[in-house]
Length: 264
Image 1: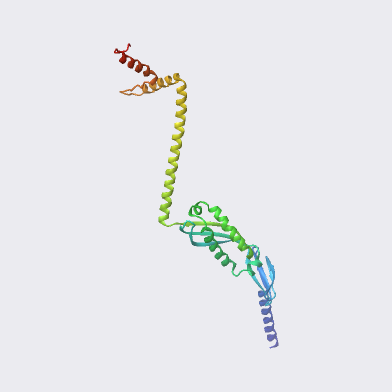
Image 2: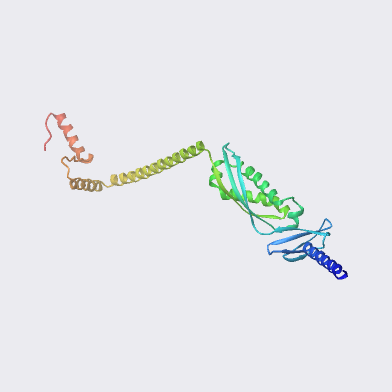
């Protein structure tokens, strides 16, 4: 009887020690830290590895140090030019100060998510739709800077913010398509006008050169005849330069005035 009673007490003692060990021993991975509180007051940050706690006197809160990915739900944004769009984004951040992440804010993951949503709406609402579609990198940096300035007090570092999708209604999509088409037509007309301008400048320069050198004009005339003769044409119209037919017209006018035909 005495042997069995001692065995029971021994078993209870072993069970009590096992319970104490289970409640006092913690193993933290390489990417984890433990924020230890002693009698409700902050004591120190421990880890990684084996951490021994005083039962009932010390408590520990685990905090991960790896980069976390947070999907920001679609937000209704009204741009500065009064266009309603839906925008969602993705946020990358990590805890750099476990003490602040536990003490300064309650549920830092949820707090960062809510802050990211409000910041996304506030920043994008200050820009026009064209900037939202074409300047995503600059907007990403603006959002990241604002978030980093506010989450720094929580011991959280925002590493990157990326706008994923910008959803437009059908009417706005058609309006953007018409705008793009009009822009392409405008560029085509500008290019055509620039070509006409350059062509007229070159023609004016050529006319000036030919005017100073009548022989060059004759050579150009003969070259034109050569080009015309190369084609299989049934009818050929020969242009006559003014400097050739001008003297003939003058002689004809003089002969009409004297009442006789001009000599050939």
